[in-house]
Image 1 (cartoon, rainbow, N blue to C red):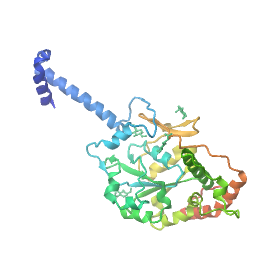
Image 2: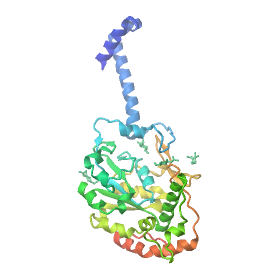
Image 3: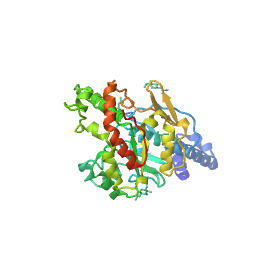
Length: 341
Ligand SMILES: *[C@@H]1O[C@H](CO)[C@@H](O)[C@H](O)[C@H]1NC(C)=O
Ligand SMILES: *[C@@H]1O[C@H](CO)[C@@H](O)[C@H](O)[C@H]1NC(C)=O
Ligand SMILES: *[C@@H]1O[C@H](CO)[C@@H](O)[C@H](O)[C@H]1NC(C)=O
Ligand SMILES: *[C@@H]1O[C@H](CO)[C@@H](O)[C@H](O)[C@H]1NC(C)=O
């Protein structure tokens, strides 16, 4: 570097004659200083997560923002980093808070996450592209970091557990669940919002959720996804119970810290995410994350307000889910205490 600098200066010496006044020693010192300063600047930006103390510099964030440090880090390959298969997957459940969980965990310096849902294990076409293709979709990480990918459809996909086991039988899985009726309403609200965007209508909630004879319509996918006991069976037949951490999504939304603390522990990470990393946005009614470099909230499609649903309908649905919930508690040996009427 020093040699290069001196040569470059020599070349331009005719124009920048003044530089000749600098002794070789001073020139060398100048070059070294410039080198160190630029190195520090680059290191500061890219290795931000390794610096414990940096100045508070808030940056607003939107999921679709074109350039931010995160996306840069995913594209730039630092020495000693490579793309690695995930050692941890967030498998579901849809509308359970998977995006919030992923973004909250990502505050931890030992976590690297895939921003996109890859849908590798639930999509035939993608699965057939092979593990090497999947690995290429992952962010660059250091050997001691944990790569996390989330695709909520894994939870309900038959065959996904076997495929995941074939990749890594000791993988760690995160499942975040919410009270089934709340999840169903949230799922419906999202489907309705998506349809509205395309100027399409969605049938009223009760018409989709109940059959004409008044029974619950288990053919409606959103109803089925909340029947957690049906799906957890296939995971428990492939993985050990202690490989799966089940997070209470309703609690995480109210108070993220304890749930994230448990997750760090489950992943064998040092506790680095503190209460100070979460702040509540009153307008959004939602927790946002903050650390030295970012201050970010989930975008508007998250934490959406639900449509008002008749309490009688809610009660009927709770009764319907009660036996499935109890079976779920027994299977996972964890009682969520969801209301039964
Ligand atoms: C802050 O969080 C972002 C992701 O939300 C992460 O990329 C970044 O490395 C974190 N910075 C520090 C200093 O931990
Ligand atoms: C499989 O997952 C475990 C648990 O996260 C991890 O320690 C291990 O390194 C992974 N194995 C491979 C080959 O990625
Ligand atoms: C809270 O969210 C609102 C609406 O998205 C936004 O305008 C406001 O800046 C946020 N406040 C903070 C402190 O992040
Ligand atoms: C929110 O994020 C989703 C996916 O990440 C994106 O499709 C959508 O356009 C975003 N919405 C807003 C309002 O930014």
